[in-house]
Length: 304
Image (cartoon, rainbow, N blue to C red; front, side, top):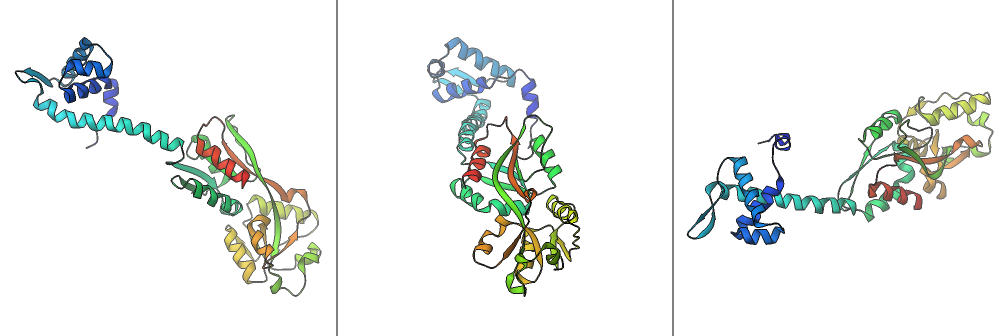
């Protein structure tokens, strides 16, 4: 059964009354309870009287055998004990959260950005394995709205990304660079040595037209009189990567996404020699937050 907790807040109720009742009920003594709670005996008696008035029934009675619980008092005692245990648990829970042993860190991120920091994320999870990371993929605009409302803790993305909220701050994490990539085994010529006008004759798989990185590429090529009409458009970095690995397609990726493939020779890159393709991966978060998990996550990405 669900109870309307707001009613208790509005009523003349003090949780210290339950604490006093518990001390008296367990010790069977007003004087012992007074000593344990560091309050006067009259204060103990007054608190018990207030609680009995609140419930409209006696909870304790004095008899030949001393202080005993009434039927109502016996029924109330285990409930009060559970309440006090939960209050104690609240403190332990907060301590666990502050020590990153409990809780959820909600991160707004796109799939192509996740690939830039997955190794650092893995190391962070290994260090704080009791903390749950929850990744939310939405448009940048939606993620910013969620951050401003407090629905997520931070956003990892590349500029342009900003908020009009004065408490939301942008902090750089690491350098990243866009490049065109291809599988050299699928091509007769060395594309990285060819001018872009020749490379443009290849088949392309590119990010969706509305994405920032796609607009950057189109604007750059158009400024040189080059127009590329991709055969495939994809929102997923994995789709682009798998396609260029298996076919003769050329794809637009962050160099950091394919660092291992470049190193082992699986993929080659065609540098896009313009500063616009070199950018900062950033984190957007509420600078007023004192959440240790947010600051430790940012630290892990920077140091990774």
